[in-house]
Length: 454
Image (tube, rainbow, N blue to C red; front, side, top):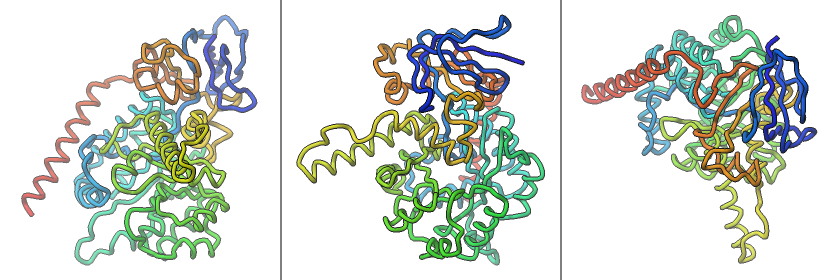
C-alpha cells in the first residue's frame, strides 16, 4: 500500500480533538489519513515529504460554482443579476455544445485543484440534453477532483407553444439514468445532487415534485433563493407544511429571506451556501453570513461564477469575513458610537466555512473537511516560507488572510498528488487551455451573430 508522510510541518487539522500542531506529521496510507501527531515512525518504503516551513490544511470545499461558464471568464464582470439572467441563461447558454460544457468543466475543475480546492460542488444548470450532462460529468471525472455534480436544468426563454422553465419539473428519468450509470456510487469521487428551481423560481407544483423526488432518491436538493420577486409567494410555507423542508435542503444566497422564515429553516436543519463576492457585485444583497451566525449556524462558501470573478476560495472567504466584520462594526458604531472592543468573527471561523462546514453541507463530515485519522486524504500544503507569508505569527491568520494561489505548493486528493512543487500534475494542459479559449471565442461569436440576425 502506498504510504506518504508529511514530516515536521505546521498542521492545522480543523479537528477539535487534534487541534493545531506547531510541528507535526501527517501519515497517509492508500487513500486515508492514518495518523496526525508529532514524530511518526514509518517503514522504509514510505515517501517522505519535508514539511519544514510549510502549513498543512484540509482540502478546501467550494460549496457552489457553475464551472460550465469557465470559457466565459470575465465576460459578465459588469452585469447585474438581471442582465445575467437575460444575457447568460436566455442568451449564451443556448449556444453551448456538449464539447463546450466538457472543456469548461474540466479546466474549471483543474483550476479549483490548482487553487487548493479538493471538493467542488458543481452546480450545472445548462444541460439541455443528456450529451451535455455526460460531457460535464466526464470533465469532472477526468480532472481528478472530488465533486458533487448538482444536476440542474437550463433556463431559456420559451419558444411559442413551450412551457416556461418554471413550469417544468426536474427530469426524473435523467436523474435515474445518472444514478444507474456514472454516478451510481454514493461514496465515489464524483457523486450526484440536484440543482432544482425551488419555490423562488418555480410553480408550487414543480417545487413539490422536485422536493419529493430529492427525498425519495436520498439526494441533496440545492436551489437559488433570491433575485427579484418569488415565482410562488408563500411557497416555502407550503413546503414546510408538507414536511419537505429539512436536512438535505440547501439554499444558495438567501439574501432576502425574512427573519421568521430563516428561523424556521435553521431549526429544520437547512444548510446555506453564500457566494459573497458575486452576491454583492450582481445585486443580490448583503450575504447572510452574520444572520446565520446569530442563529448558531455557519454558512458554506462558494465562488459562483468565473464569468464574473476569480475562482480563488481563500479570496471568497476573506470577502465574507471582511464584509460581515464591516457590518458588525457599523452596527456597533450606530448602537454605541464606537467600534466593537474585539473582533466579532475570528479567522478560524472563516476557515471552517471552507472546510468543515462544506463537508457538513454535503453530509460527508465523517469523510472529508478535517485532517482526522480515518478520513479521506484530501489536503493542501502551503509554502509558508514564501515572500508574502513570512513571518508566520498565527498560522490560521496566515492561511485565511495572506495565502493566495502562488502559495499552494501541493494538493492531495484521496491520497494521490494532484499538484506538486507548485505545478498541476496533468498532461496536455496547454492543449486544454487552447480548447477552452477556442470554445469561449466561438460562444461569443455565435451569440453576437444571433443578435445581428435578430
